[in-house]
Length: 346
Length: 138
Image (cartoon, rainbow over all chains, first blue to last red; front, side, top):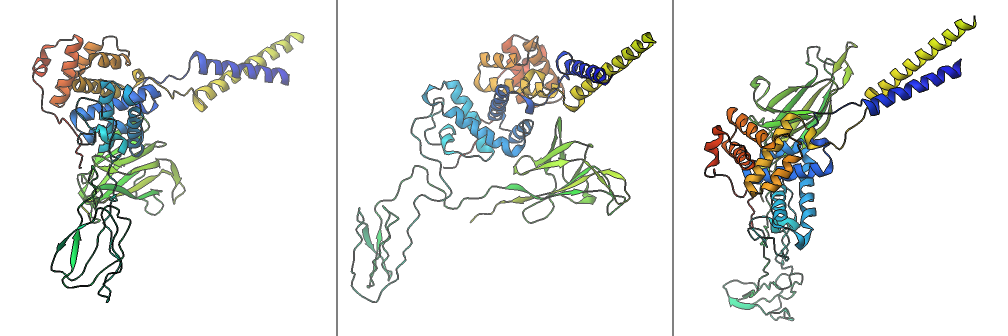
């Protein structure tokens, strides 16, 4: 009997799997964009970029991108996609060029600045409206200047005679100025610092006749862009310390750069098959920068600030925990975003 | 006696097959269901399909390439793309969407051959839109 039983059970399992996997599988008719096949995903991203170029609404583009994946990685994906398409070289059609321009503009707006895409941005080197960029382009400026001015290291020596001469070409043109030190600045080859200094009265300050001419003048003091950073992400078991504490709640606090609560900040809360937006400051009794959101048991969420660059709080799972009384509760989460880089420049 | 035994075996076998089928269905539908990783745009939620149509309209407003717009709409497998775009344009109009959105959809609908009287005002001159969203600092 047991072999027969096992055999029949096996036949039954096979029948069940045949039905559930082939004949009548689970059907997903309402899927979110993050499940799209690569080709459709690519088209969706290009459309987001072109729509952004059309309406200029970055917040909207961010919301659309959030449907494809977490906001932090989507900017990178857009930039990478633009680079991949730009790598096609001269075989690109005008339509391709416009697609890349849209992608490059969106990547730029999302904070991903690639030198390879500079030629596709208005104002970038090699940018020609309505045409493919020229083959030669100047690299994107980096935060560090390419030609830092050399710093004189030697101090005036008591000896009144110079023992060596700078040998750089072209020879700096000297002008007389009523200062009391001679400082030689090399400009053509900044890595070489002249070692000679002469003490004399009056002294001369050579003025370089040539200055380096990078096509894009690097910004010496890069200004950090405002960005909301995730300052805290804490899982709380409600009722563990306070029996009246609400369960299954997402409590978000947004702080400005000074650490004060910031109202009217729009946040995107996203889960596997949906998303919603919440604003801080709607419950002033909880704080000007406070917002909350009810979590659904078993669901996982991502939270980010929209409209500006922001970290994305991930791994927020509304699972269960055992409270102080031994009962089960849906966990709550506390998130704090803090603004950094706002207006601070050197 | 022998007949009773046969019946017993039959019932046991039947119960085993049913139990196995139930087990198989439970595994196939609940524990390890078919996963759709590579879905089509056509299977998106209605809200995302509408978003997709709107973006096609915006892209068409940007590049004026009707063939591309048609190809993109074809991904949605709509029975009547022109009227679907026009319907969305009217729905956007009625819910107070931005003029830029309504105009993009109305123009695409018109280009595809769907004419709606309510959308005529949006087929005229271009609305002001930012031409370049990027501000590159040299």
